[in-house]
Image (cartoon, rainbow, N blue to C red; front, side, top):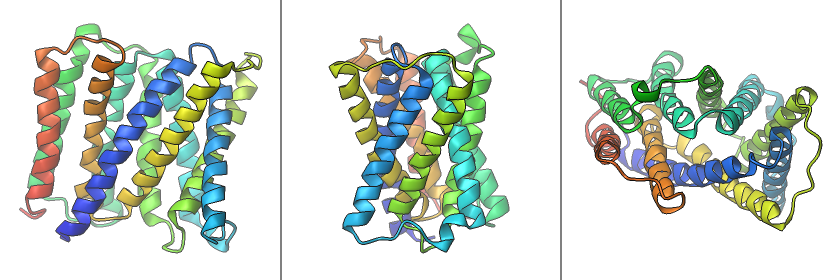
Length: 288
């Protein structure tokens, strides 16, 4: 195991999760006034433009034969699925339920990495993942209120994100972060267009506040996306992926600071378990 690569990948993952948490909060706020398809269309278009500009400045080509390679096509399909259903979950279901379900992504990714990429996932890493999952349960306490049927949306979204992350790992080495980001955000545009067919809501002209929130969501999303893609291509998937649990910690901080939510003992204990699980997986050898 390359510990330096694992450390760099883990750092990128933590930054990505912080940015994704900010994006979630902004999207949740926007969903109260804007139709879901409009959010997806604006968010996807904004991110695609940013990555297009970034690639142009670096002289990178966005249209190559690798774009239509099987891993890239599979990745876009998973991107559309994950984004559409997770945004729907944020908009329609309790944010806490959607968040805890999303934390199952590392378990799916690590298990699939062992099967697809033949990565060695030792007993210690599985123990670390279990500790992180236990921390999620302690924080959210799903049994207290139960999950609504809308939680299925978050489950489908979680599976979509897991598939996207694995496909990113399998993408051709010639496909850089700019290309992954550009086509990933184009996938979000497609998701918005597909959902617009079903959603009957008419177009809402955003005011200055909504425009600012949209720009903020795009900025956070671009940073998160770039760091996530870098993380998934640096170090072992099974070592880097568990740091996705930090998204829950950042969500708690945003809840307390921005939304004035009470910080209970269960939240403190659960968050501690989540952080410890990431350290345990990184600090211990993967074998045994």
